[in-house]
Length: 381
Image (cartoon, rainbow, N blue to C red):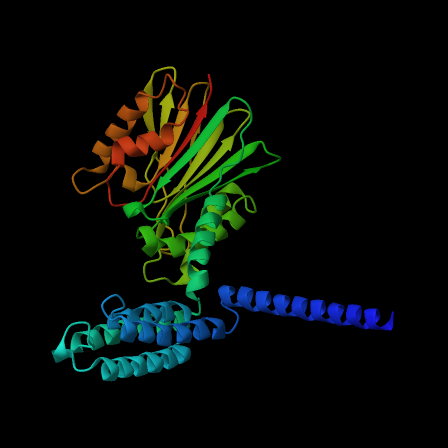
């Protein structure tokens, strides 16, 4: 019994030790891929690759070329910190010297260490070091860089989600960034206020386009989302203008249009900060009307005043808000672009504009190298 108890106790200690080792290894791996831990695991693996490649090259240089040493060097540029990377480079240089000595001069035959091999390996090492230094300066390791960008894109998408509307109303929103990128200088924030009776929507076009304007658009969308609904409707654009002025950006202006819609009566107000006019389709006449409010660009000067324009959406009416990328391009002016937009929109009247926003962007500005955004709100007849 005593011997069996000792064996059980020993086995239990071994299981606990193995479990602690697994937990420590898993925690180290998680910290590493989050960018918070040491890079010793990757460093050890890459250092083991270097002699393995050197042995393969000496044994069979035809199938394992000396230039294969660029593989751990490229991987090191993505995985290691600059200080660790220098150690990997030293090991790779030593492997090249050993291969050169064992294989003989490059003039005696193929599959030798030639000057071209040395140049290729050195060039890859230089590029890897530059990448590692850039990551170290930014402070975002490559393992988290793509995840962070994906998270930012999803946050913009969530902030741009339109709230549900009561029965009898339809809304949709479509955005196409410049150059097929994931980030755009156009964004929308929306909220239902006054107990859900009022819909407030702000469509903004930040100066610039694509990735250049994406970071500023993310910052502004968060700030505008916090302001929307926290201030009276007429106080939103002045507050947004003051916020942009405080940022003191070199290219810090933006255009914006603020819609305040009563979901019970259909009455609305539009306030504009240098934005294009909205378009309203009157179901009774079948005509489109421009609704243009007055106001300067956001972020230009303090004390700006924004004067609203009023209207009403009756059953069957449609209101379109859009950015200039949808109607303006190098080969056409805004008036021509608006005519084309309304002409394409007339084709969707019978279908009730379900799914029309994306189709209108595709039809009117599919290949324009600018951010394009379109917001549709219709009152069902």
